[in-house]
Image (cartoon, rainbow, N blue to C red; front, side, top):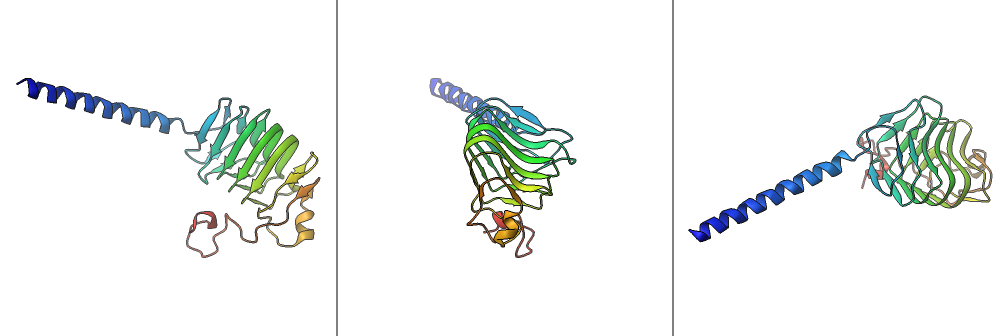
Length: 205
């Protein structure tokens, strides 16, 4: 009888632990970003859905932050800024499609920032750099921005291995403001669909 009772107690404990794991998992999922917000604490943040914005959308003001958009979009109405990194360090932005803003991504007074596998297109300025150091971009689509693809107010920006919508050096250079290192560059758009299978190149193995 004592053995049966102990087994029941053990099963109850396992069931309670299982419930706690489920609840904890649900809490993590609930932390996904669903609307424009300010990120002021370290951590990894995920976009849960596309976001439409009429103002500045996501502002990162904390160091040690990763923003993973999962190839979802942040869409503006022609003004403001899609993603701003301000007074921060050790920041990663990945898989974000930022379109139709005055500035797609603005990095200000920040260092050690990596932008990868993202899209900054159909803005006035795709990427703005001001008072930054150790900012790098990799495997992004930065094209079709009406003023500049990159506006760099610092000494030099490393924007190699990105796609610029052209393979002509002079054409690409004409879309830059300031000292921007853009060569070597990608010749295939990571956000294009070369084989017309409905999957962007970045996700098409």
